[in-house]
Length: 151
Image (cartoon, rainbow, N blue to C red):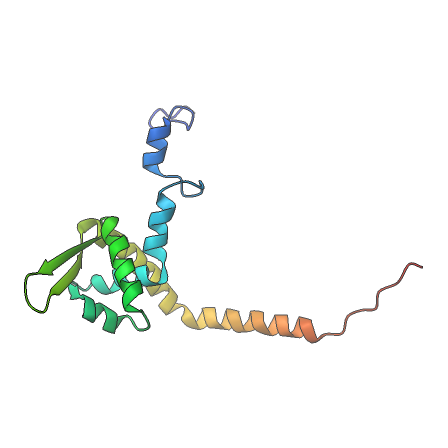
């Protein structure tokens, strides 16, 4: 079967392959974006902004445990990637509002699906963790079978 619509990797130029992204390739730029989107704070920022525009202080309040520095870095990365719009209002004291771009809404919906799945399956995940920890603890406490020495 010859599929003309999907060219083989041999027929695709290097530039086209870079544009498409190859997440498993060491130097693929998609890895950096994946890191921004899937970082602990990136995920949470995207999920919060799905509800609409928020100011910096609102984001910080909603996302428990994030430092001002980490939130600022996360917002800058997501803005550079084209997922977030930053709007500085000319008032005193200065106000900055953050919202998702159309591209940001798309990726935030994907991340929200993952976070929803985790939340819904948290009891099962915690059970699996506890079972694994119990198995490891039991393996550490069981006496080892004597080994035969070759002398």
